[in-house]
Image 1: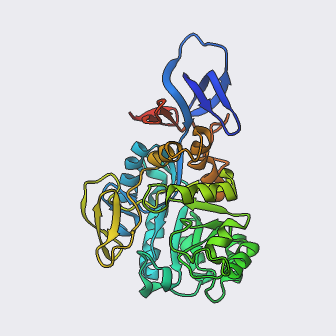
Image 2: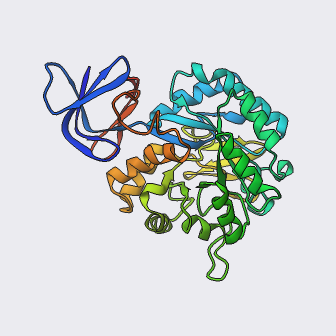
Length: 375
């Protein structure tokens, strides 16, 4: 089967008026020569989006630990343009995290929607000052034994964990986690610039939702934010217009380079749902006016952002062009966790997981293995 669009966005170039050949669910070739039969899809064919930080969608949450929920989330986020994702946990008891990891490991191969490319453990090794919507009752110093157990229970799926670098034993934990093939992110932390920088030098390579849940930039105390800006690391950004001012997002992109920014949603179960009352872990949340906030205190509690909207937002805010925006929501997040060998780009031999956008960057269709699954 051949598919055509005005533009096809590859890893390092944009093809104009080309044809993409798909055979047995894989991308076989790109050609300028018009085939006898093809389907014209629209303005842009782009790689399927990769969400490396997403807790839930459509009323379902990973930490609900209920059979079938992972599949429902995977199907739901197809309407967001997401074809690969890391189901993301919250700070919780070791027993609850055991259960979540085990259930994902049991079900991930059978999901019918976006493909599970790992597990992101957001916590529980955080500190209380910037707890956000994470439960401080379960926070502790990092334990490599626990991480090893979660990785084993998930059948090796755990490939990203977030910690606060000021916690006791953090540096050794980072080194051992990396040796296990787990990328370490830094977040929900009051670390100094020096502590965060030391963590990056030890092997941590991602800052969780930059600006949110971290010590800020001060000219005498650069803090976590300063380290996020001034180290060779990836920075997650929630570009919903609520978590980060567009100007602040642009500053981070300019400082780090757009090839080091991973657009993520941090979406909770209320994504794709109506306004109202929801839960995030143990905490009641109210969803209203495009935000999810804790009922007690009003802190932002994840988001209800769709990744396709983040792409559109950064272009409309005039802080990234279309090519950069797509890369920040596909290739860059995939690179940040080392899964760009299977997703995040349109490449010969890769699964034909792609999206179709119109000139306004509205999502027209999502394809998995060359088959239309949304739109």
